[in-house]
Length: 198
Image (cartoon, rainbow, N blue to C red; front, side):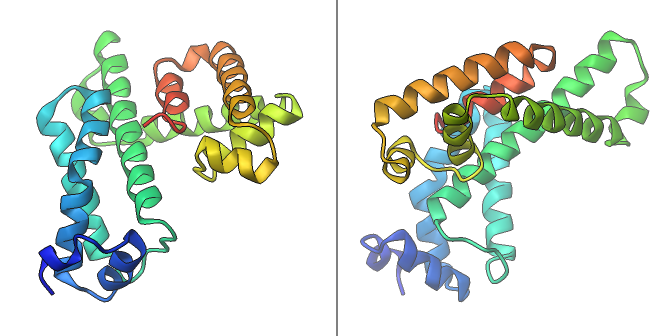
């Protein structure tokens, strides 16, 4: 099937074909999402070549693992994949810069990702601890938004509250978490700002 005929297909229909190995469906997915994913990456990284490379990595992985990935929403899957690609890249760069400042031989650092994994693990543990300290409303909204990747409208519908209330609760949660986890800056800023703001 030609990509031209697939232009009007929904993401769900594309996903069914893609998981069966339909190259035209893959090409249409690429055409539909490439620019959006590139813009997301470039907005955070500001390096054209790196942003392009991250996008290519995501689509390569999608095609290779097409029959194995558990995808309910093509859009959510791709956006989440890009979010974590960017986070991992920035995490790597932050660790590198820390070692540069400390005048440590970068050769050994780049050959070993242990320091990066420790840093990310520490951040995840600290973040989970701080989330449990949030007021119940903020905590619920934040978890639905961050962990389930729901939009503000979806969170509002699920909880039976207004989108404005969701926005206010997310704002409060982000403010508290940024303040309490400021020693992890700038990585915490990237993670928090990625919640439904991509």
